[in-house]
Amino acid sequence: MEVKQVTTKAQEGQNIQSTPAEQAHVGEQTVPRKRSRKRSITIFIAVSALNVGLLVLLWTQLLTPAANVSNQQSSGFGDSSAVGDISSPLIGKTMPDFTLATLDGSKQVHLATLKGTPLVLNFWASWCTGCQQEVPFLQKAQGQLKAQNVVLMGIEGQEAASAGQAFLQKYNLNYLNVHDTTDGTTAISYGVTAFPETLFINSKGIVVAKWIGPLTDKGLQLELAKMTR
Image 1 (cartoon, rainbow, N blue to C red):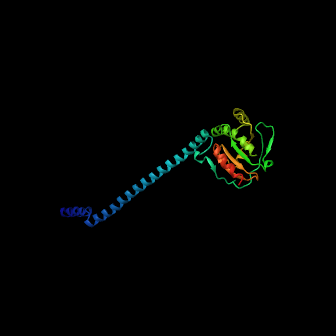
Image 2 (cartoon, rainbow, N blue to C red):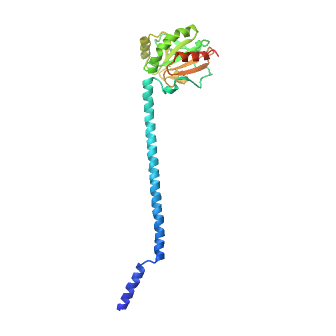
Image 3 (cartoon, rainbow, N blue to C red):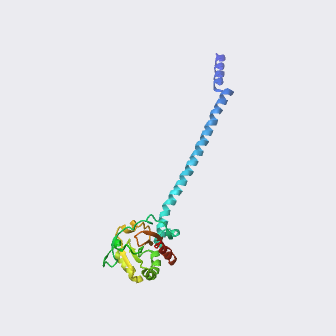
C-alpha cells in the first residue's frame, strides 16, 4: 500500500515536470509574443506621433486665416508681396459693364457709354489703409490723366455711401466716384479681392492691366503705356 502511494506521487511529479523539448517549445511561443508586443507598441507610438502632427497642422491652418484677416484690415489689402502689376483673367477681354450711381447720388453712370475713352477704374473703401495712402496721389495724377483724355473713376464698396462721401470731403477729391452695389457685384465682376485695386481699360473697352495695392507714379506710367499698344 505504501509502495503504491509513493509510485503515484512519483508519477504526479513526472507529470508536473516538463521535458527539455517541451520547455523549448514554450520558449518559442514566448519569443513571438514578446516581438508582437514590441510591434504593437511601435505602431502605437507611430500612430500617436502622426495624430499629434495632424493636430499641429490643423491648429496652424486655423490660426493662419485669422492672421491674414488681421493683416488685411491693417494694411487695406491682402498679401503685401503681391503689390504691383499682376495678371488677371480679364486682361485681353471686354470690360464688364455696369450702371452705378455717383456717391452724391446726383446721376447714374453707365460704363458702356464711356467706350472709346481710356479708363482707370480704382476700387476702394474709406476704411482701407492702403486707399488712404493712395488717394492723395490719385488726386494729383488726375490732372495728367485728364490731359491724356483718360477718365479716372473711383468705385467705392463694402460700406454705406455716406462713408464714401465723408472720405471724398476729407481728401477734397473732385474726380468721378461711384458707389458699388451692396453685394459688391461690380467688384466681383472685375475680380477684385481686396482694396485698393486698379484696372486699366483702353479706348476699345479692353482690359489691358491690373494693379493691386496703392498705385504709384511708376506703376501708373507702366500701366498707361499698355493702353496704347
